[in-house]
Length: 500
Image 1 (cartoon, rainbow, N blue to C red):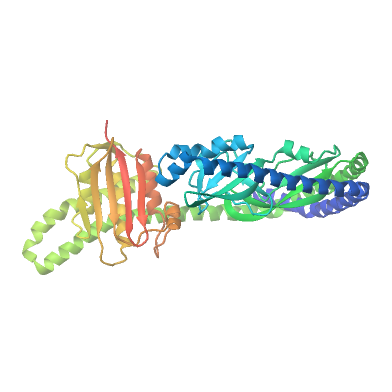
Image 2 (cartoon, helix red, strand yellow):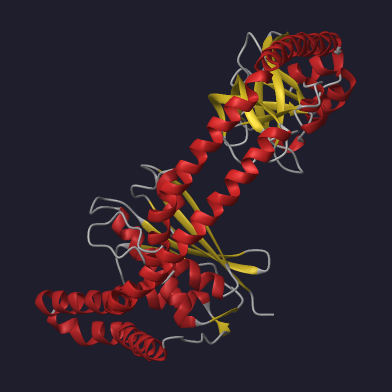
């Protein structure tokens, strides 16, 4: 949204919000006066709804008792629980029992509230189950294949083969159910829950709220164990109230439109005076941010290309100092690494000059790329399988992937004793390259963000390494997997398709 548009919206809000507040206050006062005659009927209806909910609680409890009796008498279920086999029977048990018991929702959970069997959604197995508070019905937002739905549920417990299982069962709350709770045609019911994604209603948009009946609420889709508050909202419609509101709304709309027109004219005049220099500043700032992000990525890639050169020259200096006679031989051995790194940097520079480099996918020897990448580094071990077929990839792209992963693996050691291993092997239709380390590993939270741009846990890091690796692997039609555990290291597995 442009700055000028924001300015127009801001002025509109400043002018119209007070008018809206004033108009809504009048509407509420009128509604209160007109609805006073209905208050006695509202109180009676609330009492009827409360009695119906109490009876519903008893009906659900009776149906759960029937399920409990059948479970306790089911020898096949008992045998499956004791032996741990016949898993399919257990998974389908709630689905078979739920319609027979007259329920729309049924979960069988273990002692840790993990779903053992779900009647309304078989795929809920092993997830955290729904929680219903004892001593009444709870509104539960449940998951189903077609999407979330609301139920009135209550809990129970059954013991089978010395194990305790939680039962949570209930009936669906939809517009038809709410209509049956309110037999008076002038009143409508709606159920409001903290989550706006599921709201059952039997009311229309012109109805006025006259009462609320609070009920415990659990979102079993996103927050299975957190109890909130849902409300059954009672509304009514009145022809007198509609007539009064129509008149109020007419003049209220005239006032709002007049004020909005004045605000737009004023905002348009001001926007021509101040928006252009401000927007120019925004554009300049955005350009600087984009250039900064590109510079960090270039810096990251160049450092990866310079690392092998630094290792070679450190090695040559050490040989020149300790064994000068062997310097020509060592130089000849390491010359390939120097030339490969220089070629890498030249190609990298050419690609960045194009801004949108196109990789050249052709037959590539994975083992050769690994050897060029790690060179003669003494801190990295190589376990390369013989006879690997060529893969369809760009050698430069594959080298960048391996260099980033090796660099991260070495950094994860934090200077302590440990190992970094690069291994290759043939898999089904692919060649697998694994870079593993015995470093600090990653927690689940770190792993969830590891591939985000600019996320890093290293001081001075750019946070681009793994993000680049993921994009390069995907561009090569490959896959990237991670196995990690805090304190025990990480293993990054790259699979590249074999050249067909």
